[in-house]
Length: 450
Image (tube, rainbow, N blue to C red; front, side, top):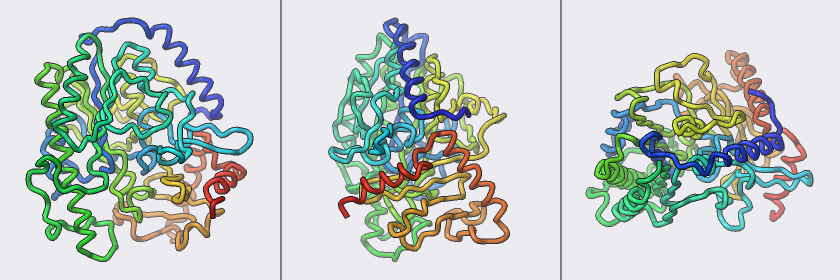
């Protein structure tokens, strides 16, 4: 990967958008290009039946997996909703989507997009939706966007209705699909489930709620077994069941309208469950590892499972390639198309992720590489009590990362290798936190209120 500065990337992205604009007015036929449906579930890790979860009731997602390819080792770029989604929509890591001015007053999509938080992408970063619209696609979005600036998303249809009402939003999707018969469409359906607050039933869904006394604790938790914890876990599974029913309704709408056979369906979570100790807003497996399923008629074979390391940063280049749109050269992600055909030649053997901030009080930057190593900036020891600067886990024997091997003499060579790979990735992606002045400015910005 070529080392680029953030400014060079933004200049390139702007040039790419301008070039695409010259063909943006063409009318393309939905008969020659595939429709694309992207489904995102909020705070969903791999708590899905086809990923081996014995408790989850997910027949519709399971059936989708039998019709295409399921990625067993799929990860988000950051276990925080807005940052994760910024990567899905741009093909970049979160730290690449912001702009850090010379006055060291940094902003970027490094945390939740809500009013007053200051977390947003640079408006010049090109989104997947912009490129698809420039190339003749009709763009729809149902549910929360959760990425600023909203002006970066040229929606032809946007319904921000609460997506827990799965029948209502299925009808909303039908409206968009019916309006899109004259051109190919790109629709993002963002289910709010299984995000908190955890609601047992919404309009009768799920039909049979979970009994909190009968749900097991998630295996990575070392918390005390309490009724409130079990109620939370039951609520998560209730949301998963409801969301799955919504997915079934949505796919049925495609079938009823005769669109299913020419529609690519991508399904993914945006981060793991909201257990902040080891899942959401961390760099541990339960936070970063999510389901990712792709059904692409004519390209993916039924019942295919890939063990390759993939990331949600790969979604944008995959979608653009499928849509016949030139993929910008400097994206961090890469198209999954070769994996659809079982070709793993030259595919990545190492995966990187990050965490910078979720909310302002949760600014605790760290970086992750190789599915094993975490590095936390040494400048923040007072903000991260009882945490080591480096953590190393053997996932083959310690799936949920309880035994830190970073100081083990046996693993020093591996740690050194991963440390080097992490630095290389940070340099190649122009990580602004390599600059201590930027890190100090960000600390000041986040902690100035005490």
